[in-house]
Every structure is written in structure tokens, then in C-alpha cells.
Length: 62
Image (cartoon, rainbow, N blue to C red; front, top):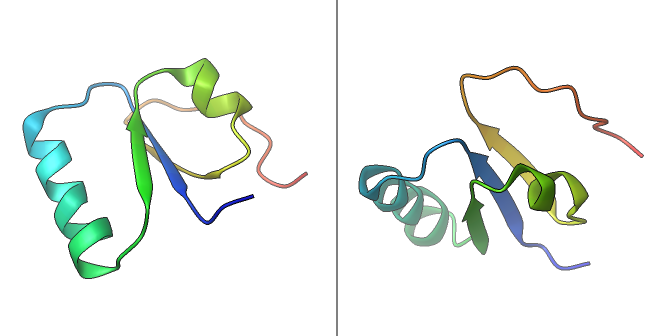
């Protein structure tokens, strides 16, 4: 598994992309990917982060 971070958001806007580029790429140097596809997010083996106002029931530790 790679050290990539997968970030789920309901809506990906230009402002969100700009903010995450600054925080994750420029500041922390973290390889990440934004997605609004919950199934892709749920089934991914990458480290995960949810940026959403919705409540999700997912298994955190396997």
C-alpha cells in the first residue's frame, strides 16, 4: 500500500481543490486524491479522510 491519502467530499469545488493543494501538497508534501465517489472511497485501501457534513458509518480499523 502506498502512503497516498484519499479524501472524500460530497462536492469538489475550485476553492476546495485550491485549499487542499495548499495544505496537503505544499505544506505537508502529502500525495492525495479528492473524490466524490463514495463507493470508490469506501472500497479503497488508501488512508482515508472524509470532508463532509454528512454522517457516515464506515469501519475504521480492519
